[in-house]
Length: 86
Image (cartoon, rainbow, N blue to C red; front, top):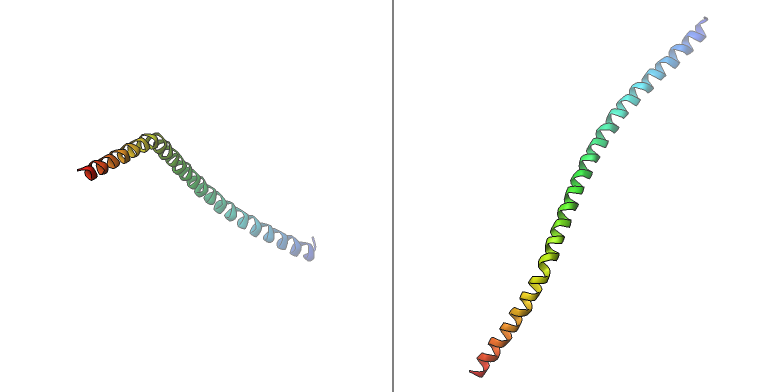
């Protein structure tokens, strides 16, 4: 091999090794970011489940609370009317 071919081989080999090192480092960071995203989505799913459970509980208790509020309003009105009559 002559010197030009050897120089070209050295340059190509070094560029390839640098590229592979940079690629490996980038791949490690991408894997770390994907793990963080997985944890974030798991937490978001837990929060969404909690919100759904709270909404279902509120929905179940909303009807009785509305009825109690109406009954309370009727009682207040009747006590006001009785006070006026006295």
